[in-house]
Length: 288
Image (cartoon, rainbow, N blue to C red; front, side, top):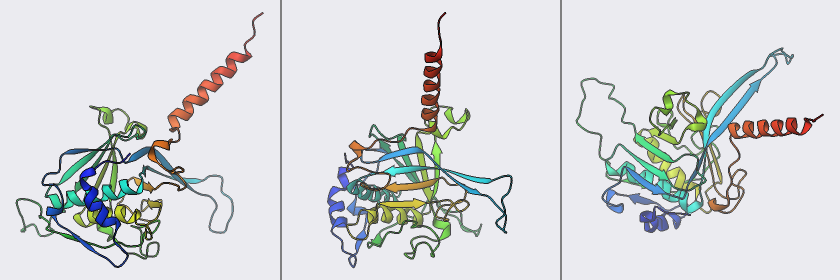
């Protein structure tokens, strides 16, 4: 399932670029208006991702009676190559549209997140005497395909292809669309929105990365963006982690989104365990 069909002709041009080619995107290449929300069925987001890392033992290698566990919440994005490329073009459209934010309504039934929002962060000038009425309007972006590394926004030792400076790394957050839902318990399993925020440079880097993932020779079927505390420093502090998958990879084990089944959430696993325990207890009852 793939839509964002308005970007199909431009996607063909991007797909045809070789490693030494380039293409300048301009506002005229995109539709005049970008809606607040655009339907997109070519992406599935699982909000139930959780990564942990443990430390045990002292500097001499001796065991300790405790273990320090670092936990990082996150989400995983699944898309076919054409869907990932069109997602990148949507981000580029937002960057060149003059808007500060826009969203995608994720219509694929497998997706746990129902909306993906992007906001362009225009940092306040460091000189308080400098002011203006509206964000800068960009007139173009020169794009050329680059090789994709597993940790593309990490420090240069982990990602030799430089894409973003630290201040331009992305910030990802959960959102809860239901009224007052976030005031209850901030349960990640109940989150139905992903919010992405970055500077214009960061949004451009994200757009290019999504297009590069789908490149036939430079692309990669897995991309990880980990936090600076429990990972390889590819996001802002306090950000969620993000993982992106193309078909026939470790997590996206099939050919199409329609064949993809997400693993059960932790709440679903607990519910299944309780149901089994209840069933076993019922089977052990005897009547005299």
